[in-house]
Length: 237
Ligand SMILES: NC(=O)c1ccc[n+]([C@@H]2O[C@H](COP(=O)([O-])OP(=O)(O)OC[C@H]3O[C@@H](n4cnc5c(N)ncnc54)[C@H](OP(=O)(O)O)[C@@H]3O)[C@@H](O)[C@H]2O)c1
Image 1 (cartoon, helix red, strand yellow):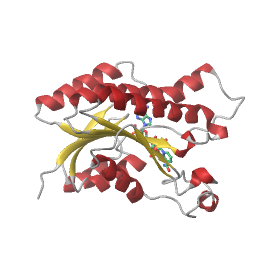
Image 2: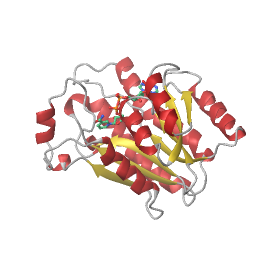
Image 3: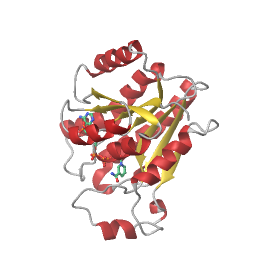
Image 4: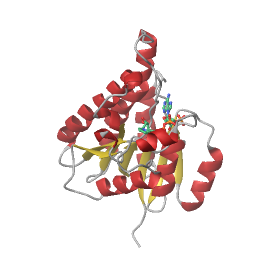
């Protein structure tokens, strides 16, 4: 049996990131980041039964974020931990219709959904082993923006440029892929019937759909600089 390799999931302690961590724990040891030092402890304890888990505190709003990330990654290397995959999941999904925008609100949305992934990718790239893939979780809104969430949609579209440009900057050693996903784990108050009907396949996605795509990208050495859409056909409705 192959030895498990270390992957990092930025935003891997809650919801979709945690679901991915659970699914990937079979084949990987995991470094999981969260903006909070505590919380999600029960889920992480359960995960630790199946694989090695290291938790790091990376808060998009921390003024010391960049140096914290670099220090943490150096420390991992010092402990003999070499990362061979990175998934950047962290993000928020705020409703911000036209008329509600102000400088602070926009800065806050772009800080977590755009600045943070940029800084995380820059920090992680030198710490990934050759052949690794950096994967970004985007949104099907990169094809057609959510009108009530234009700042969020703009941030995710900005990340498509990061995927295309970073793939060129880091080739041939590191590959870069984005996943433009539809509704997989909608918020509690979402109208699930409506969301299902807004797809060609008439269903929500599930975390296994995403982990299958993540594993495909990780194990496809000729794939880079690509956005894979995984939205049940949402973009065509
Ligand atoms: N869920 C879906 O169906 C869906 C659909 C399309 C796209 N997406 C994308 O998939 C990603 C995850 O979705 P989700 O539904 O799991 O999102 P979520 O419930 O809003 O979770 C947000 C994630 O971002 C992290 N985060 C929040 N604030 C942070 C901060 N200040 N600094 C660092 N990390 C922070 C959270 O971790 P901590 O609270 O532990 O810090 C958590 O892991 C997002 O990028 C989202 O845009 C999700």
